[in-house]
Image (cartoon, rainbow, N blue to C red; front, top):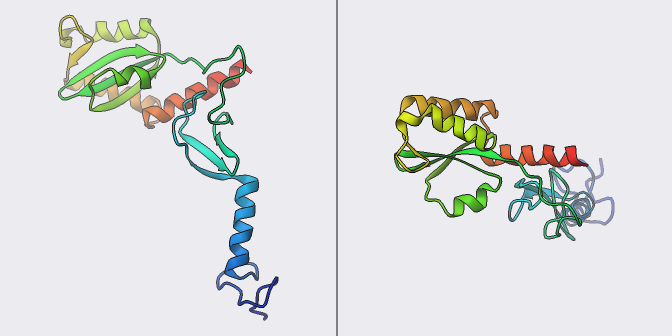
Length: 182
């Protein structure tokens, strides 16, 4: 069996499934990366769907979920897929129940230690949650005392989303909303 590179006289790289030296294997790898891209975390969430997963090409990044080219504005007349969510934030020993269509922007203005969960819903769902946990509400705020019933509710919301990272769930919802608009 020949152990030299099929393209030159160098020794073939041990363990390679084709007879190529390391230099030619790396060249082939670069060609494949350029053609098919490399899946990796985006430098920042996709502006269109919110996904954090992308494909890196020599020419730039594409969102792996909606294939939006990172850095490009939406086509005229289109905006990011709006998905209203009820969110659950923890700050110290309190939980905030609120709603927004832009969690990243909203959370930048809120003190919090952890994003506990998202559930799809608007003000109507948020008000139902406020009513349900009214006995725990800190007067004049959307913050609630932590108790086992509220924590169990947050766990159920998170489990209903597949137990996923809340941000990944939001990205999926935005991608689904974008697909429905097309």
